[in-house]
Image (tube, rainbow, N blue to C red; front, side):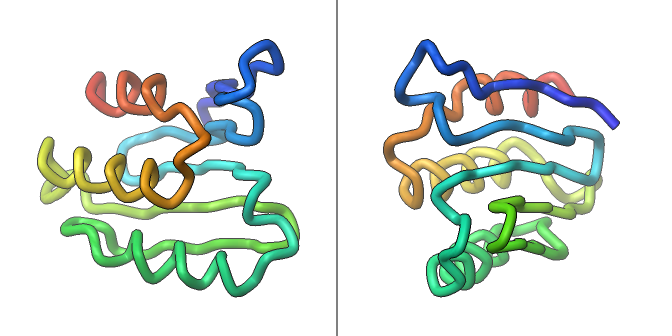
Length: 106
């Protein structure tokens, strides 16, 4: 399991989001805005599940963790961009640039 710490307390836009797993087929995030917010977690799950190539989105509202399972064969550049666009719309105060850089390397 690869841990990429994007949660740098020096930058307010990065506070609240951390990549906890990034391997082909899985993206694990911890997003503090989802903690104890089941209704928003369900909205996020529904929104992200709509991206082509994503098989499952599992969200734990107690911890704020998001596990995105995708098919590496069908999750191309367009799907990656769509996922990031949806994440940025759902969480406009978070910076997903480092996640984008990591995803494009895979």
